[in-house]
Image 1 (spheres, rainbow, N blue to C red):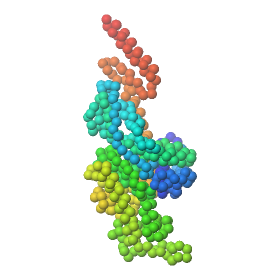
Image 2 (image 1 turned 180 degrees about the vertical axis):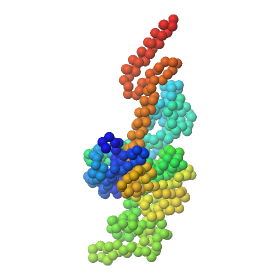
Image 3 (image 1 turned 45 degrees about the vertical axis):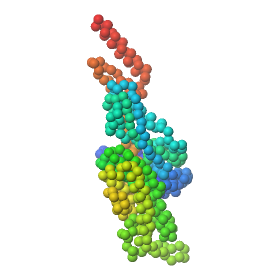
Image 4 (image 1 turned 60 degrees about the horizontal axis):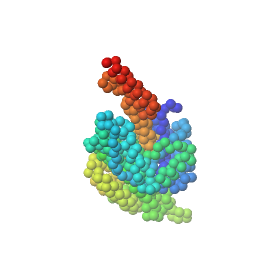
Length: 439
C-alpha cells in the first residue's frame, strides 16, 4: 500500500469532524479504506471558536481513520465554510508577446496568477480562482483557449474569498494535530464533486448542502461554477427552535428532530404524540408531532427563502434544468425535498455521495452526511490528475517543432535559461555556416 496514492479528506464541521481515507481502484472509482469521526464542540457555524476542543476532535477522527485503514496520516485536504465566505466575478486579461504562436498552458496560468493579486477587502484571503469563459482577441465563449492563436487573452473568473483569521485558525488546528494541510477547499465545491455528475452541471443545477451550522450553495451551468454562497443557518438552528418551542433538553430536541421530525406540518398526524422522559422527579413530557412539524416547517421555510433569493440573485433561476440537489445531514429530514419543490418551483432530489464510489465495506459513508468529506477526497485526486495533465501538456509543448525543414528547440518551463540561450546561439551559427557554404 506504500506505492498507492492515498488521499485524506478532513471535514471540520459544526456538528462533527470527519476524516476519510480513500484510493482509486482499477476502474477509477473511489474506495474508502478508513473513516473516523468525532463530536465537534469547538466549531460554530463553520468557524473554529475553541482551538483545543477542535484539535482533540481532529486527532480522534484521524486516529480512528488511520487505525481502520492501517496507514499513517500526514497530509489532509481540509474543507472550509462559514458565513464569512464571499464570492464575486472579476475580469482579467493579458497581452501576449506574439499573435503567431499558439496560446500555451503557461499563458492561462499567468492569467490565473494575475487574478490572485487583485485587491480584496481587508482581512480576507482568496482561496479559489476559477475561470469561466475565455475570450481570445475579443472572440468570447471559449472554454479552452490552449492551442489557439491570439494576442489578447481574457477571462471571467469566479473569485472566492474567506476571512484570513478563520483560515489561520483552521491551519493552526491542523498543525497542532501533527498534520499538514495540503489544500483548502470550499465545502460546497467538495460536495458537488461527490453528488453531482457532469450532466447535472451541464444542464444547470443548484447544490444545497444543509449542514449543522450553515447551508452552503453552489450553482453550476454549462459545466461552469456560476455562484456560491453560505447561509448562516442549518440543522442546529432547527434543534434550538425545538428546544425552546417544546421546552426540552438539547439532546432531546435533536432526537425529536431526527426520529420524528417532518418538514411539512400537513403530513403530520395531529393525534400522534411522543412521550419523552421528564427531568428529575418530574413526569414524562408529551410532545405533539403536529406541533413539532410546525416548528420545523417555519424554520425550513426561512432557509428555503434565503436559498431562493441566492438563486434569483445569481441570474440562473430560469436556467436550472437540473433543479435543486439537496445533501448534507439536514437533507435527511422527512419531506424537505417536497417543501423545496413547493416553495421554489424547481425539481428537487436528495444527492447521495455514491456517484464516484466503488465497493466499500463502510455503507455509512454513502449517507448525505458525508458528502463533503467524500468530496474532499475526490478533490485531492482531481488535483493530482490536474497536475499530471499540466505536466503532460508542458512536455508536449517542449517537444522540438519542425519549421521550414529545421528543428527548432523550445525551452521547457524550469529548464536552465542559459542552456536555452546556448542552444539558440548554436542554431544561429549553424544557419550562418550553411548560408556561407551555399555561396
